[in-house]
Image 1: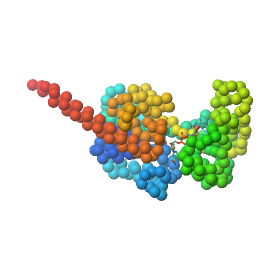
Image 2 (image 1 turned 45 degrees about the vertical axis):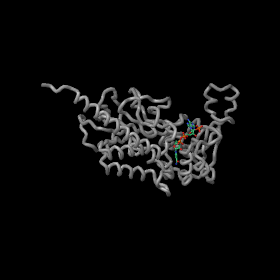
Image 3 (image 1 turned 90 degrees about the horizontal axis):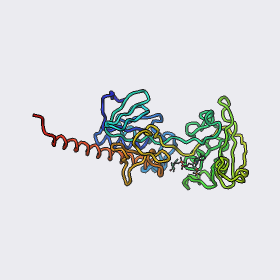
Length: 350
Ligand code: NAP
């Protein structure tokens, strides 16, 4: 916990403590910027929910996601970064220093701001998910998979997250069925092949989750799936498709004891909505063209999944985290030079 009072103005505050925030913290701390890292509702970010990370450079045998994060935090602390729990509810970015209001009402002031708030698991929108999320419906197999020993479970999605969830769940569940809205996976070939080769994992192509059955007392007991030979059955049900497409949508109810979502993530940028920072249509923070982490607002920098709709890898997040700290350092230096030359140019009062 940092000893910041409401009056303290930091050089750099980093919002988010995932791999991007930690990498920014290491660089900012080594540059003597005394950074404060605000750890939000999911300290450590998405990697803490992952099992093995096999594609992070320097770990030929792979490394646990949690271990990577813990080591990154130790590294940042070793160079003097401060960490504090606090979710930013509101950001006042019109004037400098910037002012962040935390959920507990505390204010944090900073000259430069690095937004590394990452992204959170997307929900599907199926009937029953609001009631049953956490009661048999989950976005995290590593957190909840062990509750499904001996169950038949569904995994929704066709990307790397869905494959990873399916492979993890296959250790506990009797059967895992991956439900994907098209007939082609988005996942990388190596992950897709591992899932295809697993004897407990099956695929339901061109299918989506319409409804989840069960109760908070009994958990998930079943699901209604819809399918269409051309894929994307929900779109066909939702009205814009020709009537014959709608009639071709098939419904089927299956008995399952758990449903896991692996349908991607949405960037955590709600607190920036009323600011001058530009967000794209999917809510990602927009950075200036070229190799930079600068946003539309001077002094605010973006790093990691919150500004990256394309790559979204641990290693690229670490890369943009370091870039954000270097960009912030250069910007703060330019500000200091500007104010020093302004002071020199002003005549001294007699
Ligand atoms: P993703 O690549 O965006 O895949 C999301 C999947 O969910 C897609 O197959 C998508 O279908 C499906 N989907 C999205 N919304 C849906 C909805 N409402 N209903 C049904 N299906 C829906 O997301 P991700 O799998 O989380 O991966 C994100 C990034 O992290 C990727 O770059 C990935 O490589 C990386 N990652 C890497 C690893 C690893 O290497 N170990 C593990 C996890 C993630 P469509 O295909 O039809 O769009």
